[in-house]
Image 1 (cartoon, rainbow, N blue to C red):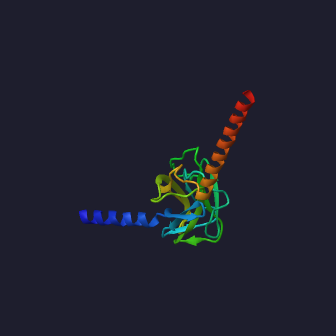
Image 2 (cartoon, one colour):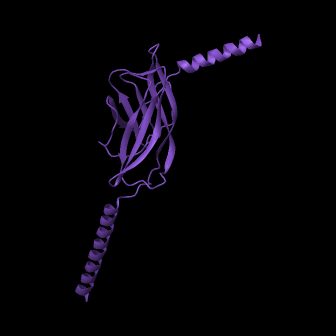
Image 3 (cartoon, rainbow, N blue to C red):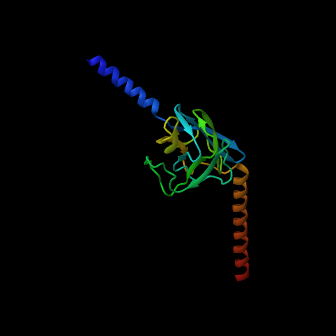
Length: 197
């Protein structure tokens, strides 16, 4: 009797795992681009999973990025917001002061594959090793057999805020401008003294 119970429980567990459907984003790394840094992600669409029009994934609390720099596979569109977009069956941590990145799909059905890159560019050069912090993602996709929406949540790497440095030419421009301002200030002080004396 115990063997039958254990076998039945094992079959049930396999069936539950097989019915589970997820979009799982992963951090793929960073690439320098001029004086900026490209952050890249990929997604895995698990077996038993479809991505249909309206399905999406959100990376929470990514922070600032350069508008218009998004790169993604055909049919995907990036939007950003301070709150959400969040699947109805999840409750990830979301700081309302940091931008979230949401990629939404519109196109023919995609079945169980890996896709990428999904990229955005942040201003400045990211030092090596890449400083990362852990945030959350949430996703909504569609089960193949039932057509039901399935939501999932997990952890993902995002930039540590304030760790990029301006590109060398920008930095030298700032130093030169500061030096010029200091010279102008000194000249004006000397002129004031000459006029008084």
